[in-house]
Image (cartoon, rainbow, N blue to C red; front, side, top):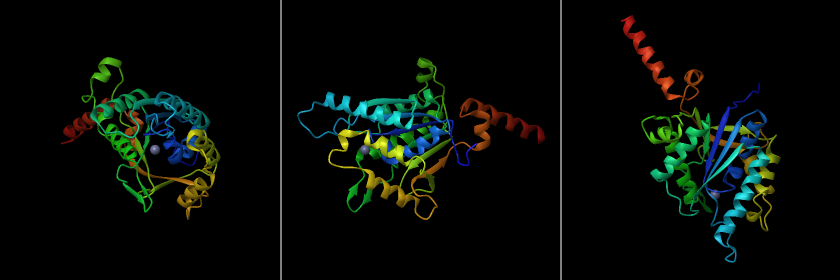
Length: 266
Ligand SMILES: [Zn+2]
């Protein structure tokens, strides 16, 4: 048993290859070491992320997906799914929400990790990428309430048999709004190695110093050398999770049982 929270299954949903490495790969690597099954969902394949006009988009996608797979392997993720939305033009559409609901119902994560949809102005020299905001918005909208409502996108169950699923917790990767800090001293090296796997993004730049500075800043005053920060949202109580594992049918049954008990008492 570990002395920190370890989910059975975790799904990271982000816009671009390398977003996971920047924001939460240290946490995911730590969980993987404890046995967590991890799914990476990349909404785009970073097809606008190589500025060389001589390299066609199809080739860019190939390069970036391969780099992402390498990064996911370094952390020990169990799968990586690309949704192939257009990089730089991401919108939190209902169509995309449905695609994410399908992935959540298929994988049944206990925890979903995504970006912070409320962050627009990051610092006096950085505006949050609009794709990051769109990805974060559509991710939380897929998590709640859609993925846990059997009568919403019910065709997913009809067509593929994936039942509605309520994730237990959402870890919103955030600097500004963080209230939960994960010590990544033991997995900082894996996070850095995974980030370096995105070779096309590292030309003329070594991320080590900045990564050490950023994660040390988050860990400051918390007895952690390096940390990642999250705003934690708990959607299903410990008690309800124990009974249901996120199955809304079981939660509903439980509610009706309680109702009957209350009626017989009165
Ligand atoms: Zn990004």
